[in-house]
Image (cartoon, rainbow, N blue to C red):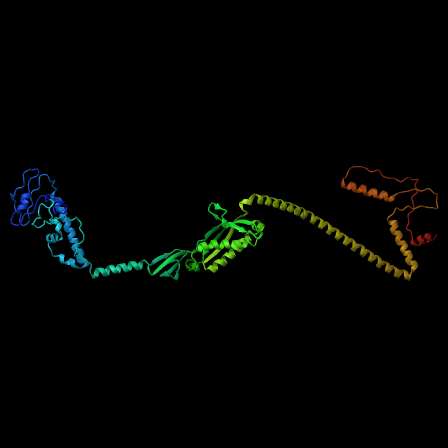
Length: 496
Protein backbone atom coordinates (compact mmCIF):
# COMPACT_ATOMS: atom_id res chain seq x y z
CA UNK A 1 0.00 0.00 0.00
CA UNK A 2 1.34 3.43 -0.89
CA UNK A 3 1.67 6.19 1.69
CA UNK A 4 -0.49 8.43 -0.52
CA UNK A 5 -3.38 6.00 -0.49
CA UNK A 6 -6.43 7.48 1.25
CA UNK A 7 -6.97 4.26 3.09
CA UNK A 8 -3.63 4.48 4.94
CA UNK A 9 -4.11 4.32 8.70
CA UNK A 10 -7.77 3.34 8.60
CA UNK A 11 -8.91 0.07 10.14
CA UNK A 12 -11.26 -1.97 8.14
CA UNK A 13 -11.03 0.32 5.11
CA UNK A 14 -7.55 -0.49 3.81
CA UNK A 15 -8.92 -3.58 2.01
CA UNK A 16 -12.42 -2.25 1.35
CA UNK A 17 -13.68 0.02 -1.36
CA UNK A 18 -16.83 2.08 -1.34
CA UNK A 19 -19.62 0.82 -3.47
CA UNK A 20 -21.17 2.87 -6.22
CA UNK A 21 -24.67 4.22 -6.06
CA UNK A 22 -27.10 1.39 -6.70
CA UNK A 23 -24.93 -1.30 -5.02
CA UNK A 24 -22.70 -2.10 -7.99
CA UNK A 25 -19.03 -2.86 -7.54
CA UNK A 26 -16.51 -1.89 -10.21
CA UNK A 27 -15.00 -4.67 -12.14
CA UNK A 28 -11.45 -3.79 -11.47
CA UNK A 29 -12.04 -3.77 -7.72
CA UNK A 30 -13.74 -7.14 -7.83
CA UNK A 31 -10.86 -8.63 -9.72
CA UNK A 32 -8.28 -7.36 -7.23
CA UNK A 33 -10.19 -8.57 -4.20
CA UNK A 34 -9.39 -12.06 -2.96
CA UNK A 35 -9.07 -13.77 0.41
CA UNK A 36 -5.81 -13.54 2.24
CA UNK A 37 -3.54 -16.45 1.85
CA UNK A 38 -5.19 -17.75 -1.31
CA UNK A 39 -3.02 -18.72 -4.28
CA UNK A 40 -5.87 -18.59 -6.74
CA UNK A 41 -5.63 -15.99 -9.48
CA UNK A 42 -7.78 -12.95 -9.42
CA UNK A 43 -11.23 -13.42 -10.83
CA UNK A 44 -13.71 -10.95 -12.07
CA UNK A 45 -16.63 -12.28 -10.00
CA UNK A 46 -18.14 -9.50 -7.98
CA UNK A 47 -18.98 -9.89 -4.35
CA UNK A 48 -22.43 -9.40 -3.05
CA UNK A 49 -22.91 -6.26 -1.00
CA UNK A 50 -25.85 -5.06 0.98
CA UNK A 51 -26.56 -1.37 0.39
CA UNK A 52 -26.81 0.77 3.52
CA UNK A 53 -28.91 3.76 2.57
CA UNK A 54 -26.95 6.55 0.92
CA UNK A 55 -23.67 5.61 2.63
CA UNK A 56 -21.27 3.45 0.65
CA UNK A 57 -20.71 -0.07 1.80
CA UNK A 58 -17.19 -1.13 2.63
CA UNK A 59 -15.75 -4.46 1.72
CA UNK A 60 -14.99 -7.03 4.33
CA UNK A 61 -11.45 -6.87 5.67
CA UNK A 62 -8.89 -9.37 4.62
CA UNK A 63 -8.05 -12.25 6.87
CA UNK A 64 -4.41 -11.10 7.49
CA UNK A 65 -5.32 -7.45 8.36
CA UNK A 66 -5.40 -6.40 12.07
CA UNK A 67 -8.69 -4.54 12.42
CA UNK A 68 -9.02 -1.67 14.89
CA UNK A 69 -12.11 -0.96 16.92
CA UNK A 70 -14.68 1.22 15.25
CA UNK A 71 -14.73 3.49 18.29
CA UNK A 72 -11.26 4.76 17.36
CA UNK A 73 -12.49 5.50 13.85
CA UNK A 74 -15.34 7.54 15.22
CA UNK A 75 -12.97 9.39 17.65
CA UNK A 76 -10.63 10.38 14.80
CA UNK A 77 -13.56 11.61 12.76
CA UNK A 78 -14.80 13.68 15.69
CA UNK A 79 -11.39 15.32 16.16
CA UNK A 80 -11.28 16.18 12.46
CA UNK A 81 -14.75 17.65 12.67
CA UNK A 82 -13.79 19.77 15.72
CA UNK A 83 -10.68 21.08 13.97
CA UNK A 84 -12.71 22.02 10.90
CA UNK A 85 -15.20 23.88 13.09
CA UNK A 86 -12.36 25.74 14.81
CA UNK A 87 -10.88 26.78 11.47
CA UNK A 88 -14.23 28.09 10.26
CA UNK A 89 -14.74 30.04 13.51
CA UNK A 90 -11.24 31.53 13.27
CA UNK A 91 -11.84 32.56 9.68
CA UNK A 92 -15.11 34.22 10.61
CA UNK A 93 -13.44 36.12 13.49
CA UNK A 94 -10.60 37.49 11.39
CA UNK A 95 -12.66 37.98 8.25
CA UNK A 96 -11.78 37.01 4.70
CA UNK A 97 -12.50 34.26 2.30
CA UNK A 98 -12.91 31.73 5.02
CA UNK A 99 -16.58 32.80 5.37
CA UNK A 100 -17.39 30.99 2.19
CA UNK A 101 -16.85 27.64 3.86
CA UNK A 102 -19.48 28.13 6.54
CA UNK A 103 -22.39 26.64 4.58
CA UNK A 104 -20.61 23.78 2.95
CA UNK A 105 -21.11 20.14 3.80
CA UNK A 106 -18.24 18.79 5.93
CA UNK A 107 -17.99 15.77 3.61
CA UNK A 108 -17.78 18.01 0.56
CA UNK A 109 -15.20 20.21 2.26
CA UNK A 110 -13.19 17.17 3.20
CA UNK A 111 -13.44 16.05 -0.34
CA UNK A 112 -12.16 19.38 -1.60
CA UNK A 113 -9.33 19.41 0.91
CA UNK A 114 -8.03 16.09 -0.28
CA UNK A 115 -5.40 16.21 -2.99
CA UNK A 116 -4.87 14.11 -5.98
CA UNK A 117 -2.58 11.90 -3.96
CA UNK A 118 -5.61 10.53 -2.16
CA UNK A 119 -6.57 8.55 -5.29
CA UNK A 120 -3.24 6.98 -6.14
CA UNK A 121 -3.19 3.16 -6.04
CA UNK A 122 -1.38 1.31 -3.31
CA UNK A 123 0.04 -1.39 -5.53
CA UNK A 124 2.65 0.58 -7.41
CA UNK A 125 0.30 1.63 -10.24
CA UNK A 126 -1.37 -1.71 -11.00
CA UNK A 127 -4.69 -0.61 -9.60
CA UNK A 128 -6.38 2.49 -10.99
CA UNK A 129 -7.86 5.04 -8.67
CA UNK A 130 -11.35 4.44 -7.40
CA UNK A 131 -14.26 6.37 -8.86
CA UNK A 132 -16.22 6.32 -5.62
CA UNK A 133 -16.47 9.52 -3.57
CA UNK A 134 -14.30 9.62 -0.45
CA UNK A 135 -15.71 8.59 2.85
CA UNK A 136 -14.31 11.67 4.72
CA UNK A 137 -11.51 9.75 6.45
CA UNK A 138 -8.49 10.40 4.21
CA UNK A 139 -4.83 10.36 5.08
CA UNK A 140 -4.93 13.86 6.66
CA UNK A 141 -3.10 14.34 9.92
CA UNK A 142 -5.11 14.68 13.09
CA UNK A 143 -4.35 18.45 13.36
CA UNK A 144 -3.98 19.84 9.83
CA UNK A 145 -2.93 23.34 8.95
CA UNK A 146 -5.30 26.25 8.72
CA UNK A 147 -7.30 26.14 5.47
CA UNK A 148 -6.07 28.24 2.61
CA UNK A 149 -9.21 30.30 2.55
CA UNK A 150 -8.69 31.78 6.01
CA UNK A 151 -7.09 35.30 6.01
CA UNK A 152 -6.72 38.51 8.03
CA UNK A 153 -9.08 41.37 7.48
CA UNK A 154 -8.68 45.06 8.16
CA UNK A 155 -9.98 44.70 11.73
CA UNK A 156 -7.44 42.04 12.66
CA UNK A 157 -4.59 44.04 11.17
CA UNK A 158 -5.63 47.13 13.15
CA UNK A 159 -5.80 45.20 16.43
CA UNK A 160 -2.41 43.62 15.80
CA UNK A 161 -0.89 47.01 14.93
CA UNK A 162 -2.29 48.60 18.12
CA UNK A 163 -0.88 45.81 20.28
CA UNK A 164 2.50 46.14 18.59
CA UNK A 165 2.61 49.92 19.08
CA UNK A 166 1.66 49.63 22.77
CA UNK A 167 4.33 46.98 23.39
CA UNK A 168 6.91 49.09 21.56
CA UNK A 169 6.04 52.19 23.61
CA UNK A 170 6.12 50.21 26.88
CA UNK A 171 9.67 49.11 26.12
CA UNK A 172 10.79 52.70 26.76
CA UNK A 173 10.23 52.49 30.52
CA UNK A 174 13.34 51.84 32.63
CA UNK A 175 14.50 52.19 36.26
CA UNK A 176 17.65 54.02 37.38
CA UNK A 177 18.92 52.63 40.75
CA UNK A 178 19.88 54.88 43.64
CA UNK A 179 23.41 56.26 43.37
CA UNK A 180 23.45 55.94 39.58
CA UNK A 181 22.67 58.22 36.63
CA UNK A 182 21.01 57.39 33.34
CA UNK A 183 22.44 58.96 30.18
CA UNK A 184 19.83 59.20 27.39
CA UNK A 185 20.98 59.41 23.75
CA UNK A 186 18.89 60.10 20.64
CA UNK A 187 20.27 58.25 17.63
CA UNK A 188 23.61 58.06 19.48
CA UNK A 189 23.76 61.77 20.43
CA UNK A 190 23.58 62.89 24.06
CA UNK A 191 20.16 64.25 25.05
CA UNK A 192 19.83 64.43 28.85
CA UNK A 193 20.66 62.85 32.20
CA UNK A 194 18.04 60.77 34.01
CA UNK A 195 17.94 60.83 37.79
CA UNK A 196 17.33 57.83 40.05
CA UNK A 197 13.83 56.37 39.84
CA UNK A 198 11.28 55.34 37.20
CA UNK A 199 11.91 57.01 33.82
CA UNK A 200 10.74 56.80 30.23
CA UNK A 201 12.50 57.36 26.94
CA UNK A 202 11.60 56.91 23.32
CA UNK A 203 11.93 53.19 22.55
CA UNK A 204 14.71 51.70 20.51
CA UNK A 205 16.03 52.56 17.96
CA UNK A 206 15.14 56.22 18.55
CA UNK A 207 16.56 56.63 22.06
CA UNK A 208 18.75 54.55 24.35
CA UNK A 209 19.62 54.89 28.05
CA UNK A 210 22.91 53.80 29.61
CA UNK A 211 23.21 53.51 33.40
CA UNK A 212 26.42 54.91 34.97
CA UNK A 213 27.38 54.21 38.60
CA UNK A 214 28.50 57.51 40.17
CA UNK A 215 28.43 56.51 43.85
CA UNK A 216 30.90 53.64 44.10
CA UNK A 217 34.63 54.32 44.56
CA UNK A 218 36.85 52.64 42.00
CA UNK A 219 40.47 51.63 42.45
CA UNK A 220 43.48 51.60 40.12
CA UNK A 221 46.76 49.91 41.09
CA UNK A 222 50.10 50.93 39.58
CA UNK A 223 53.13 48.71 39.97
CA UNK A 224 51.26 45.61 41.13
CA UNK A 225 48.82 43.23 39.44
CA UNK A 226 47.37 40.74 41.89
CA UNK A 227 50.29 38.64 43.14
CA UNK A 228 52.71 40.03 40.52
CA UNK A 229 54.82 42.94 41.70
CA UNK A 230 57.93 44.83 40.60
CA UNK A 231 56.51 45.70 37.20
CA UNK A 232 58.31 47.98 34.79
CA UNK A 233 55.71 50.71 35.23
CA UNK A 234 56.71 51.03 38.92
CA UNK A 235 60.36 51.96 38.21
CA UNK A 236 60.95 55.69 38.80
CA UNK A 237 64.09 57.80 38.33
CA UNK A 238 64.94 60.18 41.20
CA UNK A 239 66.70 63.54 41.11
CA UNK A 240 70.02 62.00 42.26
CA UNK A 241 69.88 59.50 39.35
CA UNK A 242 68.77 56.48 41.36
CA UNK A 243 66.01 54.03 40.46
CA UNK A 244 63.18 53.48 42.92
CA UNK A 245 60.41 50.88 42.73
CA UNK A 246 57.21 52.72 43.75
CA UNK A 247 53.93 50.80 44.15
CA UNK A 248 50.80 52.82 44.82
CA UNK A 249 47.04 52.81 44.26
CA UNK A 250 44.53 55.48 43.31
CA UNK A 251 40.91 55.69 44.43
CA UNK A 252 38.53 57.65 42.21
CA UNK A 253 34.88 58.01 41.28
CA UNK A 254 32.73 59.51 38.53
CA UNK A 255 31.33 62.94 39.21
CA UNK A 256 27.51 62.91 39.33
CA UNK A 257 27.19 65.79 36.87
CA UNK A 258 29.85 64.49 34.45
CA UNK A 259 28.53 61.07 33.45
CA UNK A 260 28.28 62.18 29.79
CA UNK A 261 31.97 63.18 29.83
CA UNK A 262 32.89 59.77 31.22
CA UNK A 263 31.00 58.05 28.38
CA UNK A 264 31.69 60.25 25.36
CA UNK A 265 34.73 62.51 25.90
CA UNK A 266 37.34 59.76 26.43
CA UNK A 267 37.66 56.41 24.74
CA UNK A 268 38.85 54.52 27.85
CA UNK A 269 38.59 56.74 30.96
CA UNK A 270 39.68 54.01 33.40
CA UNK A 271 42.89 53.44 31.46
CA UNK A 272 43.37 57.20 31.33
CA UNK A 273 43.42 57.21 35.14
CA UNK A 274 46.27 54.68 35.13
CA UNK A 275 48.28 56.66 32.60
CA UNK A 276 47.73 59.94 34.44
CA UNK A 277 48.76 58.39 37.76
CA UNK A 278 51.96 56.95 36.31
CA UNK A 279 52.87 60.23 34.60
CA UNK A 280 52.21 62.33 37.73
CA UNK A 281 54.24 59.97 39.94
CA UNK A 282 57.23 60.07 37.59
CA UNK A 283 57.11 63.86 37.55
CA UNK A 284 57.01 64.18 41.35
CA UNK A 285 59.63 61.49 42.07
CA UNK A 286 61.95 63.05 39.49
CA UNK A 287 62.19 66.15 41.69
CA UNK A 288 63.03 64.21 44.89
CA UNK A 289 66.13 62.41 46.11
CA UNK A 290 66.16 58.71 46.81
CA UNK A 291 66.26 59.07 50.59
CA UNK A 292 63.39 61.53 50.47
CA UNK A 293 61.24 59.12 48.46
CA UNK A 294 62.05 56.10 50.61
CA UNK A 295 61.97 57.55 54.10
CA UNK A 296 60.95 61.17 54.42
CA UNK A 297 58.21 62.63 52.23
CA UNK A 298 55.81 59.87 51.16
CA UNK A 299 52.73 61.79 52.26
CA UNK A 300 53.92 64.91 50.49
CA UNK A 301 54.54 62.93 47.31
CA UNK A 302 51.05 61.39 47.46
CA UNK A 303 49.40 64.81 47.77
CA UNK A 304 51.45 66.17 44.86
CA UNK A 305 50.51 63.18 42.69
CA UNK A 306 46.82 63.63 43.50
CA UNK A 307 46.94 67.29 42.47
CA UNK A 308 48.78 66.53 39.23
CA UNK A 309 46.43 63.68 38.32
CA UNK A 310 43.32 65.78 38.85
CA UNK A 311 44.74 68.53 36.66
CA UNK A 312 45.47 66.12 33.80
CA UNK A 313 42.09 64.35 34.03
CA UNK A 314 40.28 67.69 33.98
CA UNK A 315 42.14 68.66 30.81
CA UNK A 316 41.06 65.35 29.24
CA UNK A 317 37.38 65.96 30.27
CA UNK A 318 37.06 62.47 31.70
CA UNK A 319 34.51 63.40 34.38
CA UNK A 320 36.58 61.60 37.05
CA UNK A 321 37.37 62.88 40.53
CA UNK A 322 40.50 61.56 42.30
CA UNK A 323 39.69 60.69 45.91
CA UNK A 324 43.09 59.64 47.30
CA UNK A 325 46.58 58.41 46.39
CA UNK A 326 48.32 55.94 48.73
CA UNK A 327 51.94 54.78 48.35
CA UNK A 328 52.01 51.12 49.39
CA UNK A 329 55.70 50.42 48.98
CA UNK A 330 58.85 52.27 47.90
CA UNK A 331 62.15 50.42 47.67
CA UNK A 332 65.23 50.17 45.44
CA UNK A 333 65.46 47.62 42.63
CA UNK A 334 65.98 43.99 43.53
CA UNK A 335 69.50 43.90 42.06
CA UNK A 336 70.86 46.39 44.63
CA UNK A 337 68.59 45.46 47.51
CA UNK A 338 71.37 43.84 49.63
CA UNK A 339 73.78 46.76 49.31
CA UNK A 340 70.99 49.19 49.99
CA UNK A 341 70.03 47.29 53.15
CA UNK A 342 73.60 47.61 54.43
CA UNK A 343 73.57 51.32 53.73
CA UNK A 344 70.24 51.65 55.48
CA UNK A 345 71.58 49.76 58.49
CA UNK A 346 74.62 52.05 58.70
CA UNK A 347 72.36 55.06 58.45
CA UNK A 348 70.21 53.69 61.24
CA UNK A 349 73.28 53.23 63.45
CA UNK A 350 74.32 56.78 62.71
CA UNK A 351 70.88 58.05 63.61
CA UNK A 352 70.94 56.00 66.82
CA UNK A 353 74.24 57.49 67.93
CA UNK A 354 73.07 60.97 67.07
CA UNK A 355 69.94 60.43 69.12
CA UNK A 356 71.95 59.17 72.08
CA UNK A 357 74.25 62.21 71.92
CA UNK A 358 71.27 64.52 71.70
CA UNK A 359 69.68 62.81 74.70
CA UNK A 360 72.86 63.26 76.78
CA UNK A 361 73.13 66.88 75.69
CA UNK A 362 69.50 67.45 76.58
CA UNK A 363 70.20 66.12 80.07
CA UNK A 364 73.45 68.02 80.74
CA UNK A 365 72.91 71.36 79.07
CA UNK A 366 69.82 72.34 81.10
CA UNK A 367 71.64 71.57 84.35
CA UNK A 368 74.65 73.64 83.33
CA UNK A 369 72.41 76.46 82.22
CA UNK A 370 70.57 76.35 85.55
CA UNK A 371 73.79 76.43 87.54
CA UNK A 372 75.14 79.31 85.46
CA UNK A 373 71.92 81.20 85.92
CA UNK A 374 72.05 80.64 89.69
CA UNK A 375 75.65 81.85 89.90
CA UNK A 376 74.81 84.90 87.85
CA UNK A 377 71.93 85.69 90.13
CA UNK A 378 74.09 85.25 93.25
CA UNK A 379 76.77 87.47 91.80
CA UNK A 380 74.21 90.09 90.94
CA UNK A 381 72.85 89.91 94.50
CA UNK A 382 76.31 90.19 96.05
CA UNK A 383 77.11 93.09 93.77
CA UNK A 384 73.93 94.87 94.72
CA UNK A 385 74.47 94.19 98.42
CA UNK A 386 78.09 95.39 98.48
CA UNK A 387 77.30 98.38 96.36
CA UNK A 388 74.42 99.40 98.56
CA UNK A 389 76.52 98.88 101.72
CA UNK A 390 79.34 100.98 100.32
CA UNK A 391 76.91 103.67 99.29
CA UNK A 392 75.37 103.59 102.77
CA UNK A 393 78.76 103.84 104.47
CA UNK A 394 79.75 106.69 102.21
CA UNK A 395 76.51 108.49 102.95
CA UNK A 396 76.96 107.92 106.69
CA UNK A 397 80.55 109.14 106.56
CA UNK A 398 79.42 112.27 104.78
CA UNK A 399 76.93 112.96 107.54
CA UNK A 400 79.56 112.32 110.26
CA UNK A 401 81.95 114.59 108.44
CA UNK A 402 79.44 117.36 108.54
CA UNK A 403 79.03 116.92 112.29
CA UNK A 404 82.78 116.61 112.81
CA UNK A 405 83.36 119.90 111.13
CA UNK A 406 80.95 121.49 113.57
CA UNK A 407 82.39 119.87 116.78
CA UNK A 408 85.55 117.88 116.24
CA UNK A 409 86.22 116.87 119.86
CA UNK A 410 82.72 115.73 120.55
CA UNK A 411 82.51 113.82 117.34
CA UNK A 412 85.85 112.16 117.96
CA UNK A 413 84.88 111.09 121.48
CA UNK A 414 81.54 109.79 120.21
CA UNK A 415 83.20 107.66 117.59
CA UNK A 416 85.64 106.28 120.15
CA UNK A 417 82.86 105.33 122.56
CA UNK A 418 80.87 103.61 119.82
CA UNK A 419 83.83 101.58 118.75
CA UNK A 420 84.62 100.49 122.27
CA UNK A 421 81.00 99.38 122.80
CA UNK A 422 81.19 97.19 119.79
CA UNK A 423 84.50 95.73 120.86
CA UNK A 424 83.51 95.01 124.47
CA UNK A 425 80.19 93.57 123.41
CA UNK A 426 81.93 90.86 121.41
CA UNK A 427 84.70 90.00 123.91
CA UNK A 428 84.95 88.62 127.45
CA UNK A 429 85.12 91.20 130.20
CA UNK A 430 87.78 90.91 132.90
CA UNK A 431 87.89 93.57 135.61
CA UNK A 432 91.08 93.96 137.67
CA UNK A 433 91.45 96.10 140.80
CA UNK A 434 94.90 97.50 140.69
CA UNK A 435 94.70 99.25 144.09
CA UNK A 436 94.58 96.06 146.12
CA UNK A 437 96.95 93.15 146.21
CA UNK A 438 97.99 91.41 143.05
CA UNK A 439 95.83 88.33 143.63
CA UNK A 440 93.62 87.71 140.61
CA UNK A 441 90.49 85.60 140.74
CA UNK A 442 89.11 84.71 137.28
CA UNK A 443 85.41 83.96 137.10
CA UNK A 444 84.17 83.17 133.56
CA UNK A 445 80.60 84.31 133.88
CA UNK A 446 79.86 84.21 130.19
CA UNK A 447 80.98 80.59 129.96
CA UNK A 448 78.91 79.63 132.98
CA UNK A 449 75.86 81.33 131.51
CA UNK A 450 76.25 79.60 128.18
CA UNK A 451 76.65 76.25 129.94
CA UNK A 452 73.51 76.81 132.02
CA UNK A 453 71.53 77.69 128.87
CA UNK A 454 72.71 74.54 127.08
CA UNK A 455 71.77 72.29 130.02
CA UNK A 456 68.33 73.89 130.26
CA UNK A 457 67.73 73.26 126.58
CA UNK A 458 68.81 69.64 126.88
CA UNK A 459 66.49 69.18 129.86
CA UNK A 460 63.54 70.49 127.84
CA UNK A 461 64.14 68.12 124.92
CA UNK A 462 64.93 64.98 126.94
CA UNK A 463 63.79 65.40 130.57
CA UNK A 464 65.61 63.18 133.02
CA UNK A 465 65.54 62.93 136.84
CA UNK A 466 69.07 64.00 137.35
CA UNK A 467 70.31 66.41 139.96
CA UNK A 468 72.79 69.04 139.09
CA UNK A 469 75.09 69.95 142.00
CA UNK A 470 74.88 73.54 142.95
CA UNK A 471 77.91 75.60 142.34
CA UNK A 472 78.85 77.51 145.42
CA UNK A 473 81.40 80.21 145.42
CA UNK A 474 84.14 79.84 147.98
CA UNK A 475 83.69 82.04 150.99
CA UNK A 476 87.19 83.39 150.83
CA UNK A 477 86.80 84.52 147.21
CA UNK A 478 86.31 88.22 146.86
CA UNK A 479 83.51 89.22 144.56
CA UNK A 480 84.65 91.59 141.82
CA UNK A 481 83.12 95.02 141.62
CA UNK A 482 81.07 95.58 138.52
CA UNK A 483 80.06 99.06 137.64
CA UNK A 484 79.12 101.05 134.62
CA UNK A 485 81.91 102.87 132.87
CA UNK A 486 81.38 106.47 132.15
CA UNK A 487 82.60 107.53 128.75
CA UNK A 488 84.18 110.62 130.21
CA UNK A 489 86.20 108.49 132.56
CA UNK A 490 87.30 106.33 129.70
CA UNK A 491 88.48 109.40 127.89
CA UNK A 492 90.43 110.52 130.93
CA UNK A 493 91.98 107.08 131.30
CA UNK A 494 92.97 107.11 127.65
CA UNK A 495 94.59 110.56 128.13
CA UNK A 496 96.80 109.23 130.95
